[in-house]
Length: 109
Image (spheres, rainbow, N blue to C red):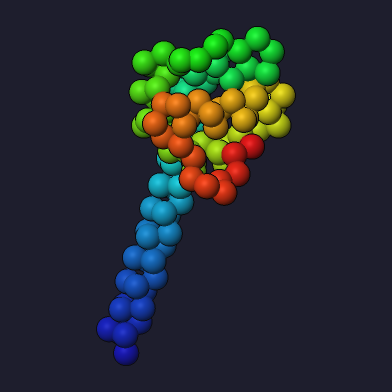
C-alpha cells in the first residue's frame, strides 16, 4: 500500500515539474518575442511608419531581421499603440520584399 501511495506521489511531483517547465518556457518565449519585436522595430520600423516612412528598398540589416522573424509570435504582440505608429500593410509588403512573406490569412495587428 505504501509503495502505491509513493508511486502516485512521484507521478504528481513529475506532473508539477512538467507544468512548471511548460509555463517557464511560455514566459521565456513571450520575453523572446518582445525582444525580437524591439529589434525588428529598431531595424525596420522606419520603413513602416504611418507618417513619412522611408522608401523601399529596405536595408540589408532590416531584411536580415525579417528573414529570421517569427511572425506568428510577433503578430500576436502587436499592440493598438503599434498600430497608431506603424502602417501594418507596409509591414506586410516589407516582409514580402525581404523574402519572408507572411502566410496567407495570417492576421497581424
